Length: 382
Ligand SMILES: [Fe+2]
Ligand SMILES: [Fe+2]
Image (cartoon, rainbow, N blue to C red):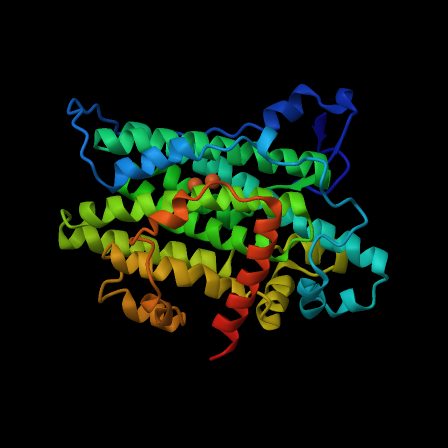
Protein backbone atom coordinates (compact mmCIF):
# COMPACT_ATOMS: atom_id res chain seq x y z
CA UNK A 1 0.00 0.00 0.00
CA UNK A 2 1.30 3.44 -0.94
CA UNK A 3 0.20 6.87 0.03
CA UNK A 4 -0.81 9.23 -2.71
CA UNK A 5 -1.25 12.92 -2.33
CA UNK A 6 -1.99 13.68 -5.93
CA UNK A 7 -5.71 14.24 -6.23
CA UNK A 8 -6.85 15.52 -2.87
CA UNK A 9 -6.45 18.94 -1.31
CA UNK A 10 -3.06 19.55 0.34
CA UNK A 11 -2.47 17.40 3.34
CA UNK A 12 -5.32 15.02 2.70
CA UNK A 13 -4.49 11.52 1.52
CA UNK A 14 -6.60 8.60 0.47
CA UNK A 15 -4.77 5.32 0.55
CA UNK A 16 -4.76 3.19 -2.56
CA UNK A 17 -2.56 0.70 -4.34
CA UNK A 18 -1.40 2.72 -7.30
CA UNK A 19 2.29 2.57 -6.51
CA UNK A 20 3.55 4.18 -9.66
CA UNK A 21 2.01 7.50 -8.75
CA UNK A 22 4.48 7.76 -5.88
CA UNK A 23 7.41 9.56 -7.49
CA UNK A 24 10.69 10.40 -5.81
CA UNK A 25 9.37 13.93 -5.41
CA UNK A 26 6.59 12.65 -3.19
CA UNK A 27 9.05 10.67 -1.13
CA UNK A 28 11.15 13.80 -0.57
CA UNK A 29 7.94 15.60 0.40
CA UNK A 30 7.23 13.33 3.30
CA UNK A 31 10.51 13.87 5.06
CA UNK A 32 11.00 17.03 7.09
CA UNK A 33 14.34 17.85 8.66
CA UNK A 34 14.77 19.49 12.04
CA UNK A 35 17.96 20.29 13.90
CA UNK A 36 18.25 20.13 17.61
CA UNK A 37 20.98 21.37 19.92
CA UNK A 38 20.84 18.32 22.12
CA UNK A 39 22.87 18.38 25.31
CA UNK A 40 23.19 14.78 26.29
CA UNK A 41 24.83 13.20 29.28
CA UNK A 42 26.27 9.90 30.39
CA UNK A 43 25.53 8.89 33.90
CA UNK A 44 28.07 6.62 35.59
CA UNK A 45 26.11 6.20 38.75
CA UNK A 46 24.13 3.01 38.23
CA UNK A 47 22.71 2.95 41.71
CA UNK A 48 19.11 1.87 41.61
CA UNK A 49 16.95 3.67 44.11
CA UNK A 50 13.85 1.75 44.97
CA UNK A 51 11.51 4.55 44.12
CA UNK A 52 8.45 5.38 42.06
CA UNK A 53 10.42 5.81 38.84
CA UNK A 54 11.79 2.30 39.17
CA UNK A 55 8.34 0.89 39.84
CA UNK A 56 6.92 2.70 36.83
CA UNK A 57 9.70 1.30 34.69
CA UNK A 58 9.00 -2.21 35.96
CA UNK A 59 5.31 -1.77 35.25
CA UNK A 60 6.07 -0.55 31.75
CA UNK A 61 7.95 -3.77 31.04
CA UNK A 62 5.24 -5.89 32.56
CA UNK A 63 2.36 -4.30 30.74
CA UNK A 64 3.77 -4.30 27.23
CA UNK A 65 0.93 -5.19 24.94
CA UNK A 66 1.27 -6.19 21.32
CA UNK A 67 -1.04 -4.45 18.89
CA UNK A 68 -0.74 -7.24 16.36
CA UNK A 69 -1.88 -9.88 18.86
CA UNK A 70 -3.88 -8.20 21.59
CA UNK A 71 -6.20 -6.27 19.28
CA UNK A 72 -8.86 -7.86 17.09
CA UNK A 73 -8.24 -6.22 13.73
CA UNK A 74 -11.37 -7.75 12.21
CA UNK A 75 -13.80 -6.16 14.67
CA UNK A 76 -14.20 -2.66 13.25
CA UNK A 77 -16.63 -0.25 11.61
CA UNK A 78 -16.70 0.21 7.82
CA UNK A 79 -16.89 3.22 5.52
CA UNK A 80 -20.55 4.12 5.41
CA UNK A 81 -20.99 3.58 9.18
CA UNK A 82 -21.28 6.47 11.60
CA UNK A 83 -17.89 6.43 13.39
CA UNK A 84 -19.26 7.87 16.64
CA UNK A 85 -22.15 6.71 18.79
CA UNK A 86 -25.25 8.60 17.55
CA UNK A 87 -25.66 10.53 20.82
CA UNK A 88 -22.19 12.01 20.29
CA UNK A 89 -22.80 13.09 16.71
CA UNK A 90 -22.64 16.83 17.31
CA UNK A 91 -21.41 18.20 13.98
CA UNK A 92 -24.82 19.76 13.39
CA UNK A 93 -24.17 22.01 16.38
CA UNK A 94 -21.13 23.45 14.63
CA UNK A 95 -22.30 23.44 11.02
CA UNK A 96 -26.08 23.94 10.63
CA UNK A 97 -25.70 22.75 7.02
CA UNK A 98 -24.88 19.29 8.38
CA UNK A 99 -28.45 18.88 9.64
CA UNK A 100 -29.80 19.21 6.10
CA UNK A 101 -27.62 16.46 4.71
CA UNK A 102 -28.78 12.93 3.91
CA UNK A 103 -27.81 10.19 6.36
CA UNK A 104 -25.22 8.90 3.88
CA UNK A 105 -23.64 12.32 3.54
CA UNK A 106 -23.56 12.79 7.30
CA UNK A 107 -21.76 9.51 7.78
CA UNK A 108 -19.21 10.48 5.18
CA UNK A 109 -18.55 13.87 6.80
CA UNK A 110 -18.29 12.21 10.22
CA UNK A 111 -15.86 9.71 8.75
CA UNK A 112 -13.62 12.55 7.66
CA UNK A 113 -13.96 14.24 11.05
CA UNK A 114 -12.80 11.03 12.76
CA UNK A 115 -9.98 10.54 10.27
CA UNK A 116 -8.75 14.06 10.98
CA UNK A 117 -8.74 13.46 14.73
CA UNK A 118 -7.02 10.09 14.45
CA UNK A 119 -4.44 11.60 12.10
CA UNK A 120 -3.58 14.13 14.82
CA UNK A 121 -3.17 11.22 17.24
CA UNK A 122 -0.80 9.54 14.82
CA UNK A 123 1.30 12.68 14.25
CA UNK A 124 1.30 13.45 17.97
CA UNK A 125 2.52 9.93 18.71
CA UNK A 126 5.34 10.33 16.24
CA UNK A 127 6.30 13.56 18.01
CA UNK A 128 6.18 11.72 21.34
CA UNK A 129 8.42 9.00 19.95
CA UNK A 130 11.00 11.55 18.81
CA UNK A 131 10.95 13.52 22.06
CA UNK A 132 11.13 10.36 24.19
CA UNK A 133 14.18 9.25 22.23
CA UNK A 134 15.87 12.59 22.99
CA UNK A 135 15.06 12.17 26.66
CA UNK A 136 17.12 9.01 26.75
CA UNK A 137 20.18 11.13 25.99
CA UNK A 138 19.19 14.24 27.92
CA UNK A 139 17.67 12.92 31.13
CA UNK A 140 20.27 13.38 33.85
CA UNK A 141 19.80 10.20 35.89
CA UNK A 142 20.30 6.56 35.06
CA UNK A 143 16.80 5.55 36.04
CA UNK A 144 15.16 8.29 34.03
CA UNK A 145 17.14 7.18 30.98
CA UNK A 146 15.86 3.62 31.33
CA UNK A 147 12.36 4.87 31.85
CA UNK A 148 12.59 7.10 28.76
CA UNK A 149 13.81 4.12 26.74
CA UNK A 150 10.78 2.10 27.77
CA UNK A 151 8.59 5.04 26.86
CA UNK A 152 10.17 5.09 23.39
CA UNK A 153 8.93 1.59 22.80
CA UNK A 154 5.47 2.49 24.09
CA UNK A 155 5.32 5.44 21.68
CA UNK A 156 6.51 3.27 18.80
CA UNK A 157 3.61 0.91 19.41
CA UNK A 158 1.22 3.85 19.54
CA UNK A 159 2.47 5.14 16.19
CA UNK A 160 2.14 1.63 14.81
CA UNK A 161 -1.46 1.01 15.89
CA UNK A 162 -2.85 4.43 14.97
CA UNK A 163 -1.16 4.20 11.59
CA UNK A 164 -2.53 0.75 10.96
CA UNK A 165 -5.99 1.85 12.01
CA UNK A 166 -5.91 4.81 9.62
CA UNK A 167 -4.66 2.66 6.77
CA UNK A 168 -6.80 -0.44 7.26
CA UNK A 169 -10.00 1.01 8.66
CA UNK A 170 -10.28 4.69 7.78
CA UNK A 171 -8.53 4.49 4.40
CA UNK A 172 -7.42 8.11 4.62
CA UNK A 173 -5.35 10.54 6.64
CA UNK A 174 -4.89 14.25 7.16
CA UNK A 175 -1.73 16.25 7.73
CA UNK A 176 -0.79 17.63 11.12
CA UNK A 177 -2.55 20.69 12.52
CA UNK A 178 -0.09 23.62 12.37
CA UNK A 179 -0.60 24.33 16.08
CA UNK A 180 0.08 20.78 17.17
CA UNK A 181 3.15 20.88 14.95
CA UNK A 182 4.31 24.08 16.66
CA UNK A 183 3.94 22.41 20.05
CA UNK A 184 5.96 19.38 18.96
CA UNK A 185 8.62 21.59 17.35
CA UNK A 186 9.03 23.44 20.60
CA UNK A 187 9.65 20.25 22.56
CA UNK A 188 11.94 18.78 19.94
CA UNK A 189 14.12 21.80 19.28
CA UNK A 190 14.50 23.35 22.74
CA UNK A 191 17.92 22.54 24.16
CA UNK A 192 16.77 22.36 27.79
CA UNK A 193 15.84 18.81 28.68
CA UNK A 194 13.37 19.76 31.37
CA UNK A 195 11.44 21.91 28.89
CA UNK A 196 11.16 18.86 26.69
CA UNK A 197 9.80 17.09 29.73
CA UNK A 198 7.23 19.81 30.39
CA UNK A 199 6.19 20.00 26.74
CA UNK A 200 5.96 16.26 26.35
CA UNK A 201 5.12 14.63 29.66
CA UNK A 202 2.80 17.27 31.03
CA UNK A 203 1.32 19.20 28.14
CA UNK A 204 1.19 16.88 25.14
CA UNK A 205 0.62 13.72 27.18
CA UNK A 206 -2.16 15.53 29.05
CA UNK A 207 -3.71 16.53 25.75
CA UNK A 208 -3.35 12.99 24.43
CA UNK A 209 -4.95 11.46 27.50
CA UNK A 210 -7.98 13.73 27.27
CA UNK A 211 -8.32 13.14 23.53
CA UNK A 212 -7.98 9.37 23.81
CA UNK A 213 -10.41 9.24 26.69
CA UNK A 214 -13.04 11.10 24.77
CA UNK A 215 -12.46 8.88 21.73
CA UNK A 216 -12.79 5.77 23.85
CA UNK A 217 -16.14 7.03 25.15
CA UNK A 218 -17.60 8.28 21.90
CA UNK A 219 -16.43 5.86 19.20
CA UNK A 220 -18.79 3.32 17.70
CA UNK A 221 -15.85 1.10 16.75
CA UNK A 222 -14.97 -1.77 19.13
CA UNK A 223 -11.43 -2.03 17.73
CA UNK A 224 -10.75 1.67 18.23
CA UNK A 225 -12.22 1.54 21.74
CA UNK A 226 -9.82 -1.25 22.73
CA UNK A 227 -6.91 0.39 20.95
CA UNK A 228 -7.33 3.75 22.69
CA UNK A 229 -7.85 1.98 26.00
CA UNK A 230 -4.49 0.22 25.76
CA UNK A 231 -2.76 3.42 24.69
CA UNK A 232 -4.34 5.34 27.59
CA UNK A 233 -2.87 2.87 30.07
CA UNK A 234 0.61 3.66 28.76
CA UNK A 235 0.04 7.41 28.63
CA UNK A 236 -1.18 7.47 32.22
CA UNK A 237 2.17 5.97 33.22
CA UNK A 238 4.05 8.55 31.14
CA UNK A 239 2.30 11.51 32.75
CA UNK A 240 2.86 10.05 36.21
CA UNK A 241 6.54 9.66 35.47
CA UNK A 242 6.82 13.26 34.24
CA UNK A 243 5.21 14.75 37.33
CA UNK A 244 7.14 12.62 39.77
CA UNK A 245 10.39 13.49 38.10
CA UNK A 246 9.76 17.21 37.63
CA UNK A 247 8.32 17.71 41.08
CA UNK A 248 11.76 17.00 42.53
CA UNK A 249 13.79 18.64 39.80
CA UNK A 250 11.89 21.94 39.74
CA UNK A 251 12.77 22.50 43.39
CA UNK A 252 16.40 22.86 42.29
CA UNK A 253 15.63 25.72 39.86
CA UNK A 254 16.01 29.43 40.54
CA UNK A 255 12.98 31.70 40.63
CA UNK A 256 13.80 33.06 37.18
CA UNK A 257 14.14 29.61 35.71
CA UNK A 258 10.79 28.62 37.18
CA UNK A 259 9.18 31.76 35.73
CA UNK A 260 10.55 30.86 32.32
CA UNK A 261 9.03 27.41 32.49
CA UNK A 262 5.75 28.68 33.91
CA UNK A 263 5.45 31.04 30.90
CA UNK A 264 6.28 28.28 28.51
CA UNK A 265 3.62 26.00 29.99
CA UNK A 266 1.07 28.81 29.90
CA UNK A 267 1.71 29.50 26.22
CA UNK A 268 1.39 25.82 25.43
CA UNK A 269 -1.94 25.75 27.27
CA UNK A 270 -3.23 28.65 25.17
CA UNK A 271 -2.40 26.72 22.01
CA UNK A 272 -4.13 23.61 23.32
CA UNK A 273 -7.19 25.50 24.42
CA UNK A 274 -7.85 27.49 21.28
CA UNK A 275 -5.87 26.31 18.35
CA UNK A 276 -5.80 22.58 17.83
CA UNK A 277 -9.09 22.35 15.97
CA UNK A 278 -10.31 20.77 12.80
CA UNK A 279 -10.69 23.67 10.36
CA UNK A 280 -10.32 21.33 7.40
CA UNK A 281 -13.78 19.85 7.75
CA UNK A 282 -15.58 23.19 7.47
CA UNK A 283 -13.46 24.15 4.49
CA UNK A 284 -13.86 20.88 2.67
CA UNK A 285 -17.55 20.20 3.12
CA UNK A 286 -19.21 23.50 3.93
CA UNK A 287 -17.09 26.12 2.19
CA UNK A 288 -16.10 27.88 5.43
CA UNK A 289 -12.92 29.92 5.69
CA UNK A 290 -10.59 28.99 8.53
CA UNK A 291 -11.77 32.01 10.48
CA UNK A 292 -15.43 31.08 9.98
CA UNK A 293 -14.77 27.49 11.01
CA UNK A 294 -12.94 28.67 14.13
CA UNK A 295 -15.84 30.90 15.13
CA UNK A 296 -18.41 28.20 14.42
CA UNK A 297 -16.54 25.70 16.61
CA UNK A 298 -16.13 28.21 19.42
CA UNK A 299 -19.75 29.33 19.33
CA UNK A 300 -21.12 25.78 19.31
CA UNK A 301 -19.52 24.88 22.63
CA UNK A 302 -18.90 21.33 21.35
CA UNK A 303 -15.41 21.35 22.76
CA UNK A 304 -16.38 22.47 26.25
CA UNK A 305 -16.45 18.98 27.75
CA UNK A 306 -13.20 18.09 26.10
CA UNK A 307 -11.60 21.25 27.41
CA UNK A 308 -12.82 20.37 30.88
CA UNK A 309 -11.38 16.89 30.59
CA UNK A 310 -8.07 18.31 29.37
CA UNK A 311 -7.49 21.04 31.93
CA UNK A 312 -8.90 19.03 34.79
CA UNK A 313 -5.78 16.99 34.26
CA UNK A 314 -3.20 19.54 33.16
CA UNK A 315 -3.84 22.29 35.73
CA UNK A 316 -3.41 20.19 38.90
CA UNK A 317 -0.27 18.69 37.36
CA UNK A 318 1.21 22.11 36.60
CA UNK A 319 0.42 23.15 40.14
CA UNK A 320 2.09 20.06 41.57
CA UNK A 321 5.35 20.76 39.75
CA UNK A 322 5.31 24.40 40.84
CA UNK A 323 4.44 26.07 37.53
CA UNK A 324 1.28 27.89 38.56
CA UNK A 325 3.25 30.87 39.79
CA UNK A 326 1.75 34.14 41.02
CA UNK A 327 2.63 35.82 37.73
CA UNK A 328 0.81 33.33 35.49
CA UNK A 329 -2.20 32.66 37.72
CA UNK A 330 -4.11 35.77 36.56
CA UNK A 331 -3.46 34.76 32.95
CA UNK A 332 -4.97 31.34 33.54
CA UNK A 333 -7.82 32.99 35.39
CA UNK A 334 -8.59 35.09 32.32
CA UNK A 335 -8.86 31.91 30.29
CA UNK A 336 -11.23 30.44 32.87
CA UNK A 337 -8.81 27.63 33.63
CA UNK A 338 -7.91 28.31 37.25
CA UNK A 339 -10.99 26.51 38.55
CA UNK A 340 -9.42 23.23 37.48
CA UNK A 341 -6.36 23.51 39.72
CA UNK A 342 -8.15 21.86 42.63
CA UNK A 343 -8.71 18.55 40.83
CA UNK A 344 -6.46 15.67 41.95
CA UNK A 345 -3.08 15.59 40.20
CA UNK A 346 -1.45 12.56 38.63
CA UNK A 347 1.33 12.65 41.22
CA UNK A 348 -0.40 10.32 43.62
CA UNK A 349 -0.21 6.97 41.98
CA UNK A 350 -3.06 4.51 42.17
CA UNK A 351 -0.76 1.51 41.87
CA UNK A 352 -3.60 -0.98 41.87
CA UNK A 353 -5.22 0.86 38.97
CA UNK A 354 -2.15 1.15 36.78
CA UNK A 355 -0.92 -2.40 37.54
CA UNK A 356 -4.15 -4.13 36.49
CA UNK A 357 -3.79 -6.79 33.82
CA UNK A 358 -5.16 -5.84 30.39
CA UNK A 359 -8.95 -5.77 30.30
CA UNK A 360 -11.18 -7.65 27.85
CA UNK A 361 -13.18 -5.86 25.15
CA UNK A 362 -16.38 -6.28 27.16
CA UNK A 363 -14.84 -4.78 30.25
CA UNK A 364 -13.52 -1.87 28.22
CA UNK A 365 -16.95 -1.24 26.72
CA UNK A 366 -18.64 -1.14 30.12
CA UNK A 367 -15.91 1.10 31.46
CA UNK A 368 -16.28 3.51 28.53
CA UNK A 369 -20.00 3.85 29.21
CA UNK A 370 -19.44 4.45 32.92
CA UNK A 371 -16.80 7.07 32.24
CA UNK A 372 -19.10 8.90 29.85
CA UNK A 373 -21.64 9.13 32.69
CA UNK A 374 -19.06 10.44 35.15
CA UNK A 375 -17.96 13.12 32.71
CA UNK A 376 -21.52 14.19 32.05
CA UNK A 377 -21.97 14.60 35.82
CA UNK A 378 -18.70 16.44 36.21
CA UNK A 379 -19.21 19.14 33.62
CA UNK A 380 -22.95 19.59 33.45
CA UNK A 381 -23.86 19.82 37.10
CA UNK A 382 -22.41 23.16 37.95
FE1 LIG B 1 1.84 7.74 23.11
FE1 LIG C 1 3.18 8.91 25.85
